[in-house]
Length: 73
Image (cartoon, rainbow, N blue to C red; front, side, top):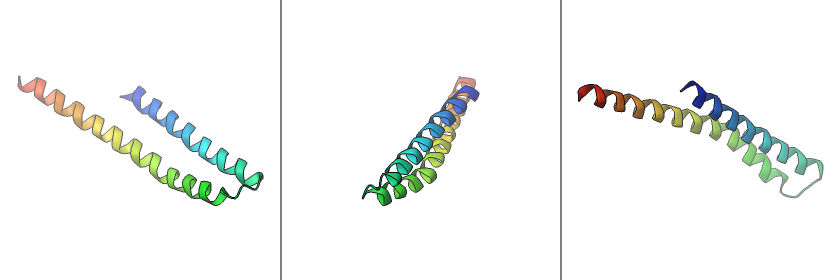
């Protein structure tokens, strides 16, 4: 579980940094879609940690149910 959290955290950090870098790149080169990329960056800043938390919570729940079923057998 510890390694899974670490891997998911690293993936989340990479995704967030890449969205920020893309937004900065398009802002510097005055792309007309910069505002859209900015909105996506803000959304991803909120969405990625929530999705990671939900995934880890589901993993714990499924793992605990599996352990409970094995104990009951």
